[in-house]
Image 1: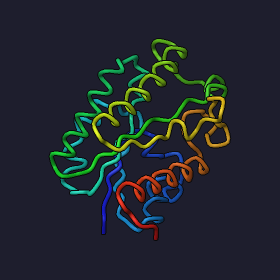
Image 2: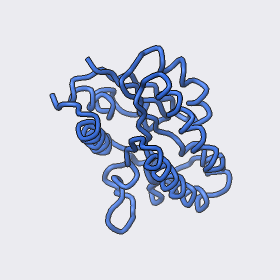
Image 3: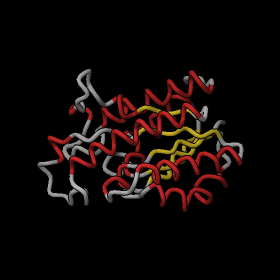
Length: 201
């Protein structure tokens, strides 16, 4: 049976949902494969890089899906640093004969977020939103230039006017709800089928 490790932050861990409703498990069921979820809420790209070897390599997966970056931007870390960390993980994966997929993080649903009592990004909301768009563009470009697969969750959650689709989010405006996770699972299954020849169950 083919195996995938999903390493990331809360968008992968999805602790706020029932495990069976999360995109990694929905993907596991759709493609009849083994998914290992190594998402940790609040983690950054540096955290992922630091735990990449023990969390991914010993499992000997066929593929690793790397999804992070939003928490880095919360702390006003530079886009180039985030990009370097993510592609360092992609290079480690390839060294160990694991195919990497770089996930592009979700947009923020600002209308919901502003109504929540949470710590704002250290450099403010406007910069965080702008840097998120820059990160997505940089990751997509670097993945294309490096012939590494990218998984565009970002634009999946935007309408034709570039506005985040509220029906796919929890009330916090940060995390996808059940419908959002189904959307993520479907997009991932399609990429795995089209590029890596995974077959639907």
